[in-house]
Length: 446
Image (tube, rainbow, N blue to C red; front, side, top):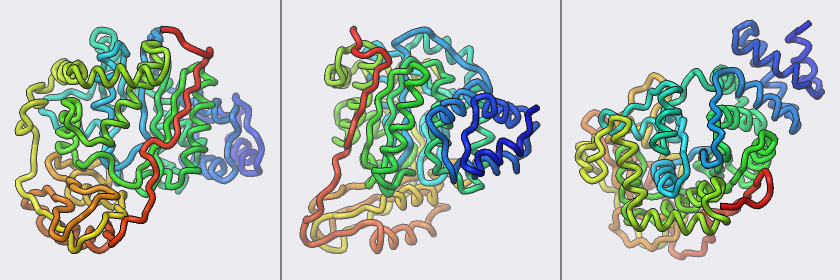
């Protein structure tokens, strides 16, 4: 007989749960027969005592099959996921580059919450773009067009939606096995043959240390391989925003510029790196380096940009926005923040820039908050850059109803969020610090 308190007690006391016990508990969460306080108790027990590899895989599987699943039986269907950060906009570059090289890219994306932006919020800045698709439409779009983007749906891994809401209010978010199961249950339900993971660490990421990021990377790879998925995981730096733009419309414009070969170097570097991994996992190149080469070619010849236009048009958006930026919502006002002295920019408080965007209306604190697509910030200087007194450090984009918050943001940026020193003695981590590719059956052939 299934008795929830017994399962909670086993994990509370540091024991190991069987696959059947985990499956039954997740089933109870999904159908409502298990109460929120029982679920919360198990979450805290897992947070304190952890899960081993088999338990993590069992939790992932149970959450994955708590709703609908898709199976394309196509080795070229490859997905990408980022653990989130400030200015992290790579999906709009990676997906079309990979699609231009023959990869089928299914994107089930989320909305922003807290200091990180959401892919769905950003793309909805494009007038008419439809993110609410049925699973049937999603599959049809992918098969016919090669790339599709939709918002998260209750049909996929509904147990995760319930558990995530509880984790958010019970201080159990940062559990690595719970993060693994949350991410992988949704990705596995999408039916991709392989997954490229961008795991970020730093003061603008959820994993604040490189050690935490590596632990999560190992857990995700192990889980993916246990489900016979090809995996690539990169550990990347989020101690400063990615690219220069922070905010929905501003980030889209930066993506369009990058696909035209005129984007920030760091954004382009990471995008072709991850797209190259997708190309390799799809069997479209023999090596990751070969995949990167193909991604760069798709960037240079414009085929990546053409794929993005096609995606926007197919999902009822106005594809002219890729060339006519005034079709996007843009804030009415700008405020330039000037450098108070000369020197070298040595530190950017990354997370705070994300929170500034939220304060301007470009993000949300709670799910019911309405997004102001046109607001945000633009960084004119990055770590290590030489700065002269009076140089523009940051431009704030805001609307009339946000004037009061702008002076507060300016004060915080100058006093805390950007540090300028006389000499540049600081060493900085590489943007892409480590990449591991794990193939289910060894070497792949094209």
